Image (tube, helix red, strand yellow):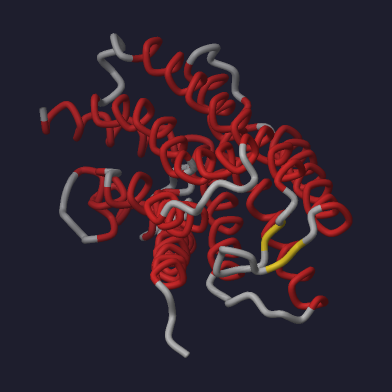
Length: 292
């Protein structure tokens, strides 16, 4: 039996999501010089998004136990991913707007992850006990109770709208700061919109069904949901690898002051850990200014 259009796009979105997350995970693991404050959080987000794409690429089954298991993990990972996207925006906001050193606090990182996991677990349990999980019109097993799904997406939209607001406020705060590269400023501004637009089609589709449960499926919205839902991880690599000048220089071995400093560090130059990131950051800033 061949795959329908919706299933094909679901597979494409899931693979892109996994691939994007995997690229960042590998870059983070193999290039230790890029492990600064933000990338520690992005690494965790990439793990959530990789697992989300992995469970979404598996075709739903008519087996009740299988469907509940898949629905449980999709609910947990999807809500945790959206919550962590908001958490990352909050870290940038506190770091750049209020100049709080939250990035250096292991306690802040652990507490944030704890609450994110709890939120994901609650959503997953709602899926199991109240969601009427079935394959339905999606490629994977998902909740078919429209009212319950509306509650879930209210949490998602709170996270995504909050993310947009925090990134926008941060952008307008730092845009006149000449020490921060323009590319980084625009990335901050774009992130909130990209995450929001990724889930826009799915939310419109679910909103139509909530207003009128008998409304016919819309092919465009079906495809948007199929691609957008598991594709959150795709942006991990786009924004934090390919649009990151410093990562590109290290990844593609482009010689620069940053590359030379990396070589000095790896060869045992006596730079302590507390000054290492500052040295790299200063060198990076010099490169950004010279590129301009």
